[in-house]
Image (cartoon, rainbow, N blue to C red; front, side, top):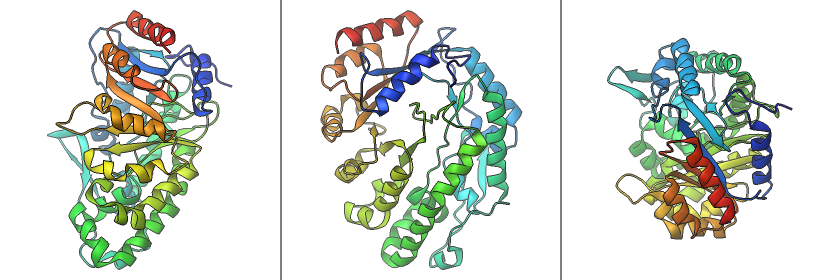
Length: 362
């Protein structure tokens, strides 16, 4: 069993703490994920990852990871993690769309829609061709990162955006919204195909990344898990009502959650709150990340939403939060199941002081 990582030498204690978390137990205090820049100034050195990987520049991406590792203290329950993502529409690319980026927009990628009106039958069943160039590129990146990560960091599960989000990328948000009325049977078939693809895609990714019980798994929501873990999400839920969600998309969300040993659901924006009761009713979802959306008050201030999530027996990621804000929200929440992912940490002692405060006040 791996007990140390070069950039998280306290890995033996950290993995024990995360194992307790997934078992529904708490050791002394809520978990804290804190990254402290060694220079005192945080720099997002891997912000062009999509651009580099789409342009087949894995060497530069790995160099950016090295720079990020060397510039960061991974404190408390942090596990250094980097994921082999080609962008939020990568699954659509695996299904035949073309991934695009530009010199003027290096932090994102997109695809042109390939399914036109009344054309779903032409594209069904949805399958991934093993020789698809983007799929082969993705798996090759996974393997490069697996070799690069050994003993240093965990290769994270990718930001897959499967289920409705993949269909939306293939068809367009407006088009998919209309298709729920105009060709519901084809959308149900497409969703059935996506559900069948998920385990195959996840297992292929896990194997290529070298994730196992020794390394564990992490993701873009930086929880760590000894067994299978990923983020489950469906941003398209914000576009539709509960009845359509229950008919077309919630079954796939539940299947993804049930396939995994543990997962966090990414609940994105105020328009998604209409679905919160249905999401919380899915037993296989362990925890929720609530994203309040642009122009809204920060997520940690949505006390009623956070308490509702806890009342349903789910854990919480409280993210993008300072030490002083942690102390405020900690008074409003049950400590069990909470993971604080902090920001603006300037020193290691600041993290240690926060952990001590949480332990004394839990």
